[in-house]
Length: 146
Image (cartoon, rainbow, N blue to C red; front, side, top):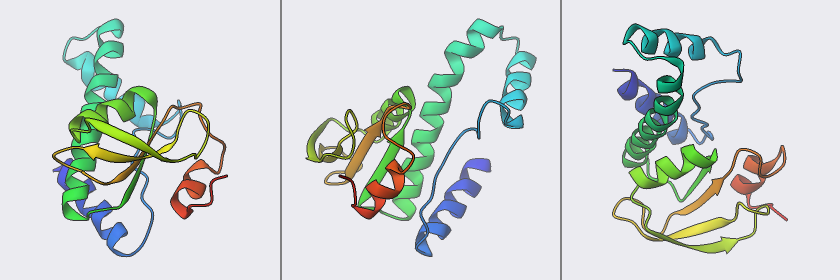
C-alpha cells in the first residue's frame, strides 16, 4: 500500500510539472531511521545484519518505486544519488550499457542508456553521495551544468 501510494503521489506531481525527489531519510536524525531499526530488531536482526541488509533492501525498494513511477509517468531524464543506492536502482531498471552525454560534475556525468529493457534511451546520472555541488540537481534538471 505504501509503495502504491508513493507511486501515485510521485506520478501526480510529475504530471503537474513538478520535480520529484524520492528519498529514504532527511538526514541522520530522521525518525524513519529509528522506525526501520525497531522493525528490523523486532524481526531478530542484530546491528551488523541490519547494516548489511538495509542498504540492499532500500536500494531494491527504491528501484522498484522508480520503475513503477516511470511506468506511470515516463521521463526523459533521471538523476540518481548515492553510490550503492543508484547502482541498485540501475540494476532494477536493467541498465546494461550507457554512454556519456554531457559533463555535469566530475565523476557524475549525464549518460544516455544504450541498453535496457526498461529505460532505453533515457538520460540518467549516477551520482555518488559526495559528488557535485549544492546545485547539482537543479543544474542537471535545467541543463545548465558547466
